[in-house]
Image 1 (cartoon, rainbow, N blue to C red):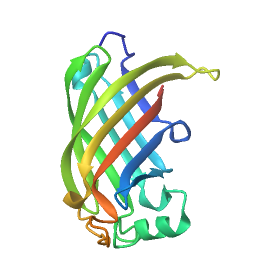
Image 2: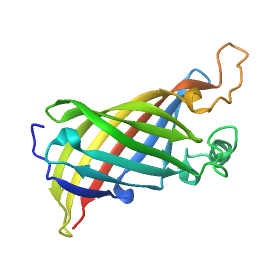
Image 3: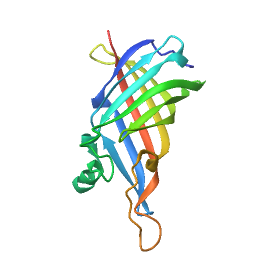
Amino acid sequence: MSTSIPAGTYAIDPSHTEVSFTARHAMVTKVRGYFRDVEGQIVVADDFAASTANATMKVASVDSGNADRDGHLKSADFFDADTNPDITFVSTGVKDVKGDDFVLVGDLTIKGITKPVELKAEYEGTAQDPFGNTRIGFSAKTDVEREDWGLTWNAALETGGVLVSKKVTLTLDVSAIKQA
């Protein structure tokens, strides 16, 4: 890394972290959603390539700005929140470290189905907040095929195409606080 990240264990700060997804809707626009309840941990190793991360998003916290759509996303048609209340990510490696950019490799579990993903990530910096906490920030992004996780619900459009795209972009902006 071009900038030194203080080694240690960091807890994800849910009030300053955003986990979002973007899907095309009706083939003409994008709809965004967020998981408002997220927790996890980042362990920065002295050798950055040995660092780890994990996160849990509560499906019940999904927020797309529309209560009806949120209810549908929580249903068995999509995330099935009653049976699968959590979406999890557990890192399995760090690779391609170039300056502040790297690839975080890990296992993403949605609806009880675990698949490997690669997140293009960037270290955003370290800061001391007004409360004496050491904070680190990361951003990351990847595209996934939602059907790989059993999210297959869709509707055909009269004009051709489908209501919800198969490709979904996942975006993370993470702030984490160093633990004592």
